[in-house]
Image (tube, rainbow, N blue to C red; front, side, top):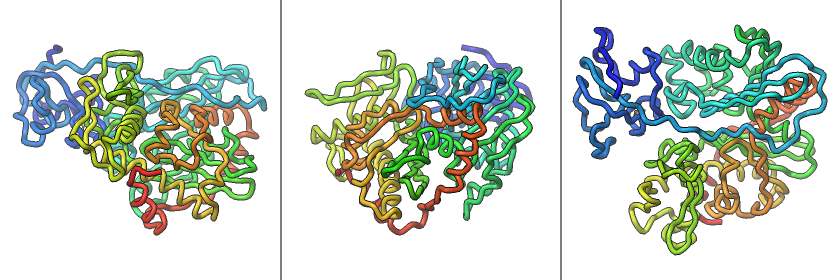
Length: 473
Ligand code: FES
């Protein structure tokens, strides 16, 4: 345990606030410190406020622990933070880096995801280093909405500084930098006003596709966005997978808290963002966690539920791919019915469990994505079966078992056998963009071509969303 000597200004502050101001490593705070998720557990003793009813419920009888966002400082205390574990961050690409290289300088390409950051150092036209880390903004919430709220409450400067401080150590001597991220993240890193993204009519202050002066890297090109919830990570990623050059109908999905979806053929390109919620990142799952050492990543049924954890370490929780597998296994074994009803309240995988509430969160997440795909097909006036190839992008995608994804209806069953995983496509797009002006132009042209379909209030989407809540192919 580490002792903390309370200062007069600390009294009344939460442990999370104190950790933030003192620069102490913070525990995960997926709900952004709102006292809802119960995940910011810290072992502690000392002069702290008594837990209220909500905290007692969230603690679930864990002796010696408090929730960092609810326990308030009343005097000196001692604390022990949960062990830091390696988070799996996908920095690999499933497609080639552009050979159209005209730039020989030291370059930096940065893909800032909501959860993780991937950074590529390029020298003489070659990637010489790949660095990845957890997005430091995670303590303001696992999802972008919590961070938009935080920005609106005066936290915008802090959000910008956190990203600048995280990138700067790798940017020394960099002559040019490309940054891509979702639209909100691109506002945070540039300091643009993000307030328009969070409220109707969801109008961002900027759609980027231009250069900014950055203190850490001279000029930084910020990738072009299409709309408030289809950002530069999607334009970069989809062009890196040649979505702007496809002949047959091709689907591109980046699965995360938002499922961003692009559907294109040689003539048209449509896109949308389906709000899946943080279930796939484990945030609103009772034993959920990110894909890190000890996370259950695979589950199957063989006379009972069997599982495998990342690095074969003792199980600490279940990540998104494990959750999808688990639901598929429970469906196959008949423990889960098509309405999402579980025969028992909890199913255990060692000490980790999956509950009825978790299945409900998964249902809403997978329904949003599947309905998003079908809505784009509807707008395209093509049946789902006309899609010839499905590209799943993003680190999380690499872990998903394609059959489990089809079994639970996250990906429509008609597309079984047509799925390809291409890793960190957004990172690849940022690298290409740094290396070649032609690639930048390609991305800008595709961003212009993409027709954005707004799903909120979309009649067909709403109807499909309800249908897709069921576990049925
Ligand atoms: S309950 Fe503390 S961060 Fe969610």
